Every structure is written in structure tokens, then in C-alpha cells.
Amino acid sequence: MAAILSSLRNTVIAGFILTILMVLAVAGVTGEGQPGGHAWAAFLVRWLHVLSGVMWIGLLWYFNFVQIPNMGKIPDEQKPAIGKVIAPAALFWFRWGAMATIVTGLILAGMNGYLVDAMTLGLQSGVAKSTAIGIGMWLGIIMWFNVWFVIWPNQKKALGIVDATADEKAAAGRTAMLFSRTNTLLSIPMLYAMVSAQNVF
Image (cartoon, rainbow, N blue to C red; front, side, top):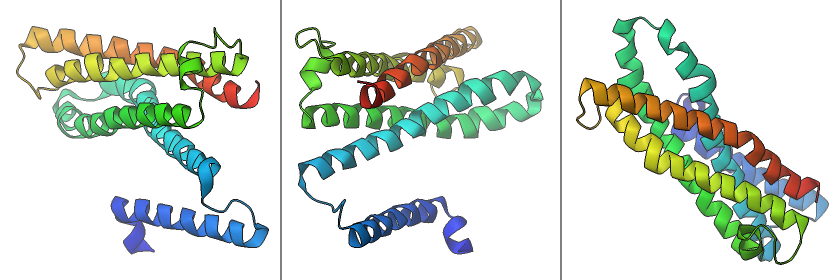
């Protein structure tokens, strides 16, 4: 067990294997939930969408609830460990989690036939579920845009990944923080819209 848990790669692989075994066991015992067909494929994409979203929003909240508020408490000589090691690694998973969430979400909406209705906020159909999921999708798209086109380019300057003057680094760090906070703000109604579309409407 230590060989599995000592390696993140092995841990993730074991998690997927355990999931497959669980699916097969439940299908074998109950006779339901067998892989195959459109409904199961759509569910698989939804599951990947949720996994990606947990990675993305989990890291967003880590930055805003843990890292940013505590940076001032870290001695200056220790800050390079955050800026040169931890933050770049976290930002890699953060931005690709955002990309995977958006891509799987759009695929899911297309597979289930509500992509256009949701993107137009259900205004043509009058379906409340499309309005709710559409609001969630648009908030997610805005957040994705912020990650890729505002936060990441500014973090590259702030962390010294690309050349920038000290003043440019400070300004870029503040811009990245403000847009990260914007995404934190938007994540709350976004998650409500997404979950309510599946459970309320």
C-alpha cells in the first residue's frame, strides 16, 4: 500500500482502478449501471467534468483562502519556495483544470442536446433548467477566460517566469489577485446555478 500512496501517479491510477472495480461490482450485484449507451457516456463526461471542476475550483479556493491571505506571514527568505516551486505547479493544474472543466462541460451540453438553449439562457424555450445551467455555463466561461487571459499571463510576470521590471511584477501580481478574487466571487453563484439545474428544475 505504501508503494501506491507514496507516488501521486500510482495513487491516481489506483483511484481509477478502484472506480472501475466499483462500477463493475455495482453493475454485477444490481444489474444496473452497466457501461454502454448514450446515457452512460453522458454520465462519464459529467463525471470527468466534475473531477476537473473539483481540481479547478479547489485550487482557486486554495489560492484565495490559504495562499494569498498567508503570504504576508511567510518570512521573505522563504517566499521564493512558494513563488518558484509551489505556485507554478499549482497554476499548471489550476489552468488545465479550468480548460478540462470547460471542454467537458461543453461536450456534455452538446451530448445532452441543451448546448444552444443553455448558451442563450433558455430565452427561446422558456425552460428554467436551461436558464440556470446557462447562467452557470456563462459564469464558468468568464472564469475560464480570466484564468487563461488575465490571471496566468500576469502570474507569469509576477513569478518571474517571463521578464518584467519590479514595478511590472507588483502590478501583475495585484491584477492576478484581483481577478482570482473575482473568480472566487463568481464561483459561488456558478456552483449554485450548476447544482440547481440538476436538482431544483
